[in-house]
Length: 104
Image 1 (tube, rainbow, N blue to C red):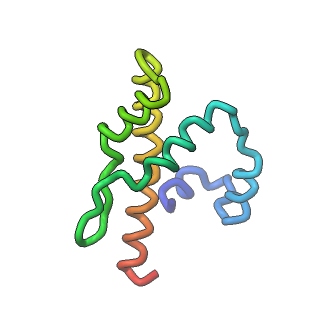
Image 2 (spheres, one colour):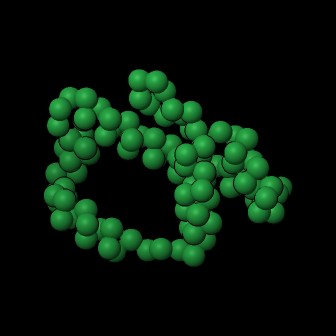
Image 3 (cartoon, rainbow, N blue to C red):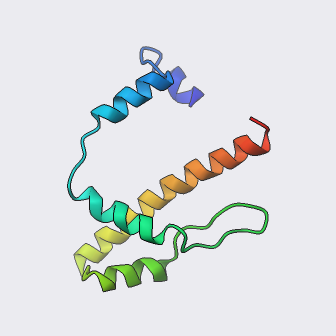
């Protein structure tokens, strides 16, 4: 976050600015497919004994796609977007865990 703020000093990096930006974000109808899938599959992952989480398994994603008739090129797109969405979640979760371990 500090690196981004340093790279763009003219931008407002307060929490209020983030909330306003979130309110302005445009929601597309097709996002719903991925958010629903992620909500259903988000716990279908390995959790480490000392914390940490692995990505959602390929098997779980592929079975979900099969169950919902997502095949061919759409399957590849689905897997790509779901992997990106889950990677973002894992990044946020790792940062939160790091902050908690540092006592923040």
